[in-house]
Length: 308
Ligand code: PSU
Ligand code: MN
Image (tube, rainbow, N blue to C red; front, side, top):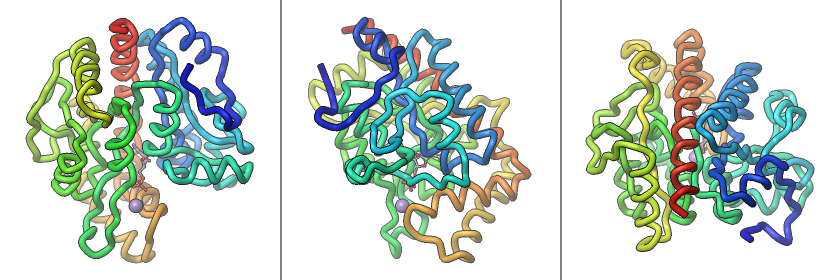
């Protein structure tokens, strides 16, 4: 059985039963809860994502570290702790998980941290809102999310609404190409723009249903060790208005410049500034897209499980 042994791991009964029965499991990240969305909407979104995975007939496994234990599936108390801004839990990329466990700490996993754990456990599908990527100005700062390298390293199908639109989308797509990560649209030939349906970039591949995605990912895994990015656009009704989106982007960039933000804080600071500048409209869009991604991930996980 795939495991994280000898690390301390706590798997919920729901997830353990699903794995034993060969049912579909979807890994969910926890950084979006701890650092990506404001309190208390973050808690509501976490619950809605889990419900969406279940509605698709799969089982959600939200991943985090609590008291040095890797948690696969979270209870209400653990979620509340993560979601509480006063606790200021650590943001764990793949490189941070081991150190946090050894220190007995608490942390929320990013996409990178989540797929590192998921891959070790044999969980093949994960959902998030928008993948991290190459930041604007990376030519000077070298700021590129470890999500990209993690996707090139761990065989997990990540369902996301493209990458966050605060990023340099073109540069991110070039890096995914270099890293050998397939980028596949779900019922779209345009790379999604997170809060918007179209980032302005075309896709080479598009698939039409979950079974087709499961087949494509299964075939990909035979010839490559990388994960796959399934690009799922936000629903038309939930898209952020174009002018609001532009205002949000400007505010996000201004906030990072004003506060001279660097490192792990860049993305959370940008998302918070974006939310303030759009009067919370970006939070509503983020909620809608991540829940829709969780639902689709549940369908893909089911199809993957059925194909085994
Ligand atoms: N998607 C969202 N909101 C988020 C994130 C994704 O809709 O906050 C998080 C994920 O955890 C992702 C992280 O891995 O943002 C990227 O952070 P960074 O740019 O520091 O790698
Ligand atoms: Mn960064």
